[in-house]
Image (cartoon, rainbow over all chains, first blue to last red; front, side, top):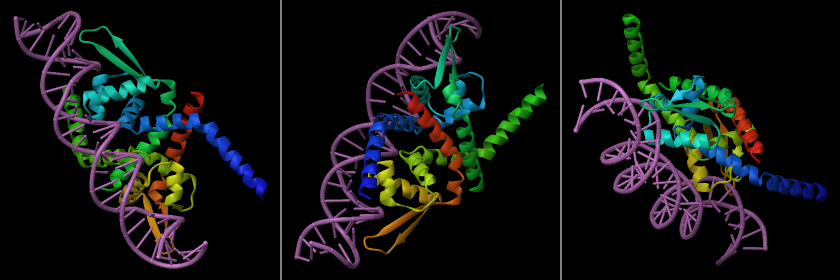
Length: 123
Length: 123
DNA sequence: GAAACAGGTTACAACATTGTTACAAAAGAA
DNA sequence: TTCTTTTGTAACAATGTTGTAACCTGTTTC
């Protein structure tokens, strides 16, 4: 009784200390994913496997350049997209999802399926 | 050539007008899901099929009562949770996911798996 | 010479969101 | 009688986020 109680205390403490750094990483990722337009950006990029240009992303998610640039910067900082600039005139910049981000595709796809379904049925 | 171009224009126009109301619903849902702690709340409630009390949810997602209450209110307003109050002393309130919200479970689960994996590997 | 293009950045004002604190209600325990 | 409990709500100051407008690069077209 007392032992198992102690055990669970110890375990939860261990869990907490073990997760202290992991938890912050988890939170950080959740905060990242919860930023405005973030899911949309990842979704539209996942829908099309080709590299996508800034203006194309902006058009598809329908947001201001400022916000799109901010989101793409955050994604790049987290290693979820790679940015490639070409010295054309005018400039061309392509964004590509990294392998890690592509691993998120199934979740995103089924989440958007759910969202679209729900939006449909509420008409 | 010209015809197919016209067709695609017509189609995109039809898509746009058709989606004008649906799009707002989609956006609304995405905004809802992107609110702080929202994914966490849905996740912890999905992990445990039993009704969950306010304090339990609050403890598990580690947020202020104000925020948790706000999120649960928003979820209820969107028909994703049901709130049941019991006239005990002190008050007991249970929250349950609706069938619609449960349909989101697979997406959430794989998304969190991805998040946990990524948080792990970045230690 | 001026405009236009893509892909941004910067500054800033307006707006949205957060946590904190105080409060409430109802009844049983000390 | 006062304390405790659960489940919130209201007000508010602090903080975070957004879009807009202006600007930038560098080359080609009018």
